[in-house]
Length: 375
Image (cartoon, rainbow, N blue to C red; front, top):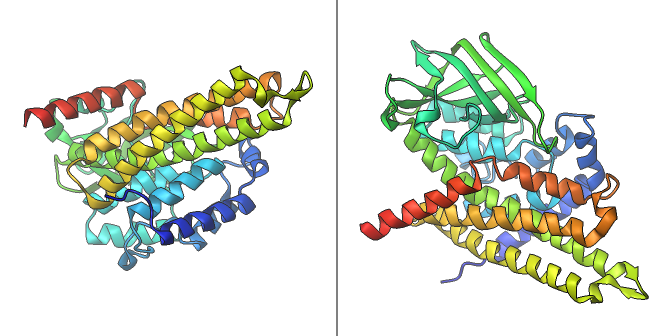
């Protein structure tokens, strides 16, 4: 079995890398990090024109109709470039939820807008601290209206709509969770930006006060859809993380070859060699898990739950490890604002919590493997 990408997919990766190198240099990332804009609107428009936003959206809904393997390729390049756009919240979360559970009318309304860069979406799941769980959802849905709050909501301050998980019963069972689409500029919706370690990935608190909501999917089927969305997003986000880890490794390697100390490059010292070797091992192991996850995602294989959890765990560890050690290789300069090391460190720690903590996915992997072995 060949888990590598095809020549056409590798060509797409090269095109995406070239495009992002030109349109998303570190200077562009810093402009958003410095608070000059909530996201890079020009880059977002360019991604739409390149067809990257709709790469996994069927052609009949305005997308490129390629598939999830191609989306994995794009995701990796987005991670390498630290693209300051709401790509993951819109494409991995909102679009996937609509693809899984949406009616034809909902798909016709939102998916073409996403592919064209005309709509930003997100998933409103969390309600404060904690990991994804039906018991943690307290936003209530009654008579087509939502009440309660969600935080943190990724890119919630700039999103046009949100897929919201709400309780439609009085208990804590999975069958009492349903999904709704809410337009965030409508009456009864209040949005408050939140501070995040990575300002290029905004977060918000969204309060619903009798906000009008449109059901997404079947009543009581919300948690089943959320589980599928999280598994898909885990694989896609893992590719972003591997892209970031690889770039952090390259930055550390290049600096180690150029920086001279005691008359020779610091890369010739054993301690630095070991540090870079450890970074390479963690990034390579993560890539292996990501490729398995990509196969499972693209074929809708029964192994997707385990593969998604393994990809998420290894990629999270690799990105955090490489981002941290990149700073160490750079020494005192690595901690300064002028160097780009901290931008990868910020992103590594921000995305590590976006879909649930590392321990959540570790527990999920163990639980899923136990259930599979028991069957």
